[in-house]
Length: 459
Image (cartoon, helix red, strand yellow):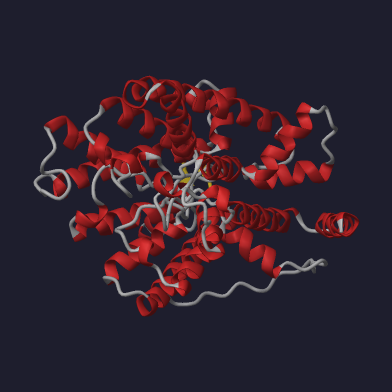
């Protein structure tokens, strides 16, 4: 039996080696999710000693690997320490990308990184090219552990007086990793099932640390590298400038909107003190950018706030980050395209640079495909689930953008609803274009060495 498994594994590895890097990333995430699902379905992973149904375990593994945070069971009350460690491991692998982890392991054991390995690492971190990708991988891993370690230390100091020494340290590590990877899984079920961070809505330490980890994790590894190598803002890449500008606009704008719409709402901000209202407004704006934690009841928000949260979730984090969504840069390119069209300009310029036509087409494609996925998912769940339409849209968008925020319908999903959301979470994490390319890719590509005549059409 062991020999047969070795042969199957050897042939599987040989088969995967012929894949294009894009397809390897897509298949790799599938294998990790399947492994996580099998582990979480074991009796040792659940407190009741029985184990989850495989579909529910697979859903949880998908949510963890895709750093989403949509859950069917409360993480603390359902899973044992073994189950929780499996979940946080899946979150770390999913957040960094499995090829980033594999490249780093090769570096530790001083193994040479082949050209194919560099291509895979480049695809995993969404880098511009293979040049410097190994160095960038080192910076990503070291930076990640330093940032998560600092967050874990501060949170542990906060939690130790409340939960005890070892439990406080464990909670600090778990929530720091979950926040940095924009996953949204929490262990606060002891304070209330599915309560997330609502007991800390007015706590400065928890709010500021979690928000900082979310934002830093959502900036993207390419931005990290640029900020590290180029301390002067004038020498930053246009990509970095767009990411930082859009991040600031979305966070501040979202916080102001939530403050205006929820200030006197007794179900959300109304009962909080002044500083709690300010913190919760900013936290809601930050967490909708694919994080998944919440300090206010999502179902208690006004319809306007739900719509704004849906929009922020759809935009998501930045390219090459631990978050999902169509990404801040794609949204910025779409806005610039609209402004250029209104002004009658044929080119799109930003920060004294002109964007390529390919960049614009890719942004439009990502937007339309993402919107199409959400529309299709909403249609299906509107049929299969007994829930308010706006809440269904919110849930589907949360899955696509790998956010994890929920108005409460996740725990009662039908079998079809679980399958649909798993597919959407997977597509959102791996990337719309990655999934589409991996499905449509052919071994041989035909190169066109000609172009058609230009023709104008009316719009």
